[in-house]
Length: 162
Image (tube, rainbow, N blue to C red; front, side):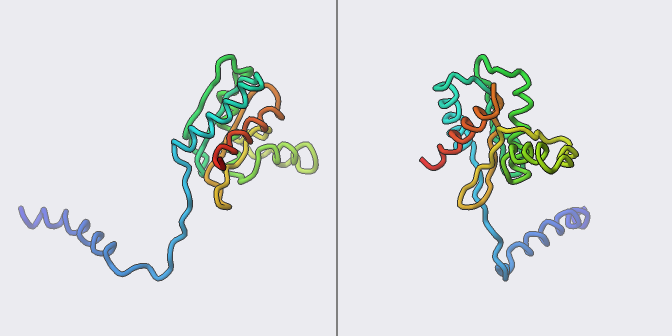
């Protein structure tokens, strides 16, 4: 019986010993992460801008991999589809590492092939969130007009520098 249990324990001990060895010869890079508290601050600032301008909307914040951190639908949000669009805009900005509006511009100008990027929202309102030169996430806003969406998103991002 003990022999059988040893067989189950050895792989764990072996892995533990590997991890306790000498330090790596090449340091691994570090990257800041977007915390829930930071995402809440971004949403609060974006919501404040939307309320001040009377532009009710949907606001979404995702991490650098495009995964949801927080989603808020303001009362009387103008576009019901915003619940799908805002997170999609944020995800698009996070994964393409640029504002979602840049893809809209590409489609409308010289790059209609961008339409083949299925599963992404190629509309204005998604903005990457950059900290110390690194993308840590993105915000997506869906309201009544594309220029309003971008202004609200920028107001949210500005909360990180205050």
